[in-house]
Image: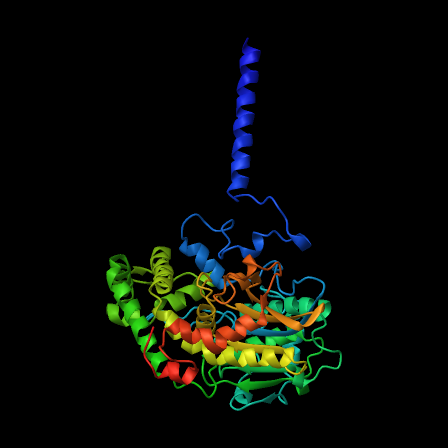
Length: 481
């Protein structure tokens, strides 16, 4: 009798498990089918951030670690993935500089002691680090636009200078370059064996950390780093807007966004108490501490495992850090909801996106120059570009973040060209505002080039709500949205 009862109990349990399994499949909570080329039809469209690996609630420490981007194991990426009958035509890379020393100092505290010399056998390590230093030390004949030629080619101070690239930052971009080389050069043969200066388009701001980050990536990427073929153009604006930087409406959106940030901070009583406590510890007025942007120095200490500063009044600690970091995350969330930043982003990113689209169109027409473009930039460069493309769920750019636009040709239909958008190795093509619905009526794992062209040339202005504005100049001088 007891055996029969146990048997019936097990039978009932098996039935329940079977029902749950079928239900999960029905509601698409577990993958049940695979598309062509072995790619799950759901995985191509997965919304960022990846839900499987995310903590159940916002964790400021987890977010800070992602921001640090500490080099470790080789990164998995989706760059260069396409059906066999597609040919890679050109690649356009936007990077944020690597890990740097703080730009601000917490008042009345000692600067964090971080060594900015490059030592091959010190962590973080990269096999090409020693050769990189040797090569950079011989680069005095490089062809750079003024004032880039006056900048150091690699970090070299026993105590980092303000904003200086660290060894971690160099290694981050050596890794980026190696990863892109394995995909774009070894697999797809993007550059010919006799490549020249004409095949590259290189642009950077006038900061040593962006120039050095670009050089580190190129050193990891190029098969033969020849100084005679490396020509960096100087970009005076962090928005990479070249000769189209005057835009009154963009500035108005930015002022409104800054006002939103200020009001959100006022509502956060815990944040205010935290600043007051930290100001008491370092014995300065709260306003002075806040103006010193303490989170910048705290993030550096966190990323390099250096303790927070102490005084005779106490210590700045991890709880202070968590409160400020949590507020940053809340600010990013509200920024997406209020959409004031989107107006700034659309106008701020248009010039560089327009330049990129024009370069893609020339490549699609068969011109083989500038097939690899690199913009070595800042978080304030990548952030508006991400927002303008509609990638609202993308995290704030981490150190050494990379945004890549790939141009592909269909060999079976040579007149057709498509684009893929990747952020830190994740395919986000179908999260963009110009291609979010394309996958519903196409099996191709990429987006028609015409979609991106139409978005940059017309739909960006439609998104602004600028009545009658069909070009950048009109949108910059006419209020809307």
